[in-house]
Image 1 (spheres, rainbow, N blue to C red):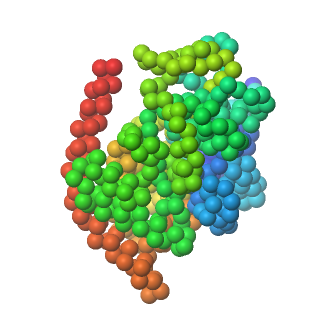
Image 2: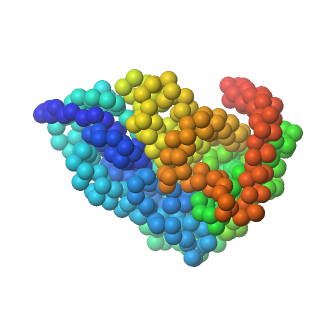
Image 3: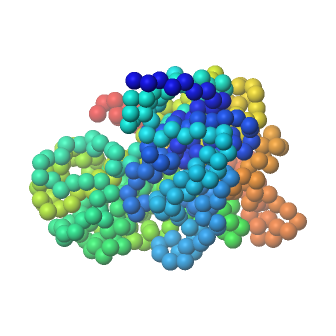
Length: 479
């Protein structure tokens, strides 16, 4: 075994979107040297393992790294996302990160990239293809870009039994199917489940031949309200105003979600089923219409076992057949629940500082690392917004995000950075000027007036969430 000695200012673990976004800001705002280590053969992290028909769920215009556009502001002209900002395909995202590495990072002479290597901790990593190991002297910080531990179907191990003879696979396998099946069973109600159902429908599978196992229904964000262009101001900032008004006026948590749904902020697949999950998934109204064509939705909890003739749940079952294709979409994209201080000594653990926006968060944290010295102040500016899971986490994350926004507003230079950073997407939209039309000023006025009232009503709503959370934990402990 050979051991090579290396030296760098920053050692970044992971060349996924988070690691790349962090490195990009360091490269732009400092003169530091960087080593990036990743177990994949190309940059892009979990995109290396994604299914072939995957696309972004958020607009491409504020995804990637700060210094390079992903799509150039294109708008989809066909399909279920028609009229909205383009959603880059997985192949486009992979090609984009490859270009960032080859045309920006490596030519700088300040970045060294070690793909196909496994990080061992304490500044040490080893090649997956040879007996070479590396020991790195890190002069400044180790950047942990692996916190999110993004889980995708291809690398996910199902937490249920699968009998011999069951036709089963991740949704990656769908495009390779060449024979008709008795039916298709989608296991999972999250983003990948949605993608699997839409793919089947787009490929002319009768919705009556689709069974969708949905342990929990989810609240979904109307993608129309996430568009970062001025053309969608009334939807994007209007939704923020409606959201603030709903929080200000809500009598309780159920009333809050009723108001958010009525105001078009959130949507659900079945208006007769109350969602208990929120993962921050976005969806277009046309996609929602397609999903509602599937009527055979099974709400019996989580699958415990697949047999050739039965699908078992805890104390219940449904029928299946040997020629039915069972598609695993049960992986939770970000399966972490713990949070840590972002800055701790010589380590930075990249987490979300804005709700369900890990890429912006990575760039933001890198900017703080590059421009602030005091660790206490750094952590004040980078309070972690927990990854959402339950429906109530919608409000929990929003409260944390509002606290961050208040703290950031006390730093004029930081606010200016966000306005000029393309991964932010929205801060510049709420900046009024003498050219702002009256209808937009009216929305900004609504937002400003509702803010203090929403803050005043938050303690009551959060108190109810604490009771709901305690009841859920007790139920889980007794299960």
